[in-house]
Length: 178
Image (cartoon, rainbow, N blue to C red; front, side, top):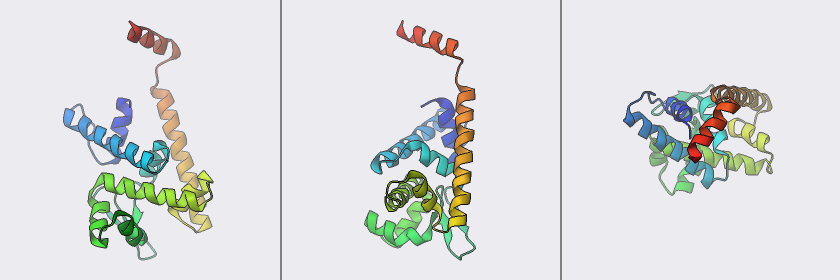
């Protein structure tokens, strides 16, 4: 993955993005967690990245909701999933809660598993499943999908803007072959 992607992933996980090799290693671990969760649940890694960005959660963070539930960690996994995730992981509810709150890879894996459940419930309709990841309530789901779509558009624009011009890319590819 490109360095810019590593920096974005590091930012999403509340890691400063500098030139220090420790930050680069943390970025690589983050990428590995996202890729592993995506592969395990047959998801595009990009959607996990986008959901991390939209959710805006952080390690150690637990956010209260109007419906008296809480969202946990980077993927803002709602506590209503604790029992099902605990059963999936063969862990206690308390262990599951702590892992979601304090371990980036566990939180991403849990969020990816929930997204897979939503996609399966949606009968393979990708966008319906992404909406269901957030809510079963139609207005909330539609609002969330708009956020996901806008975030995806911004990330695509940022990627295109950071890519070298075609002639520069051709020159770099030519030098790589030598």
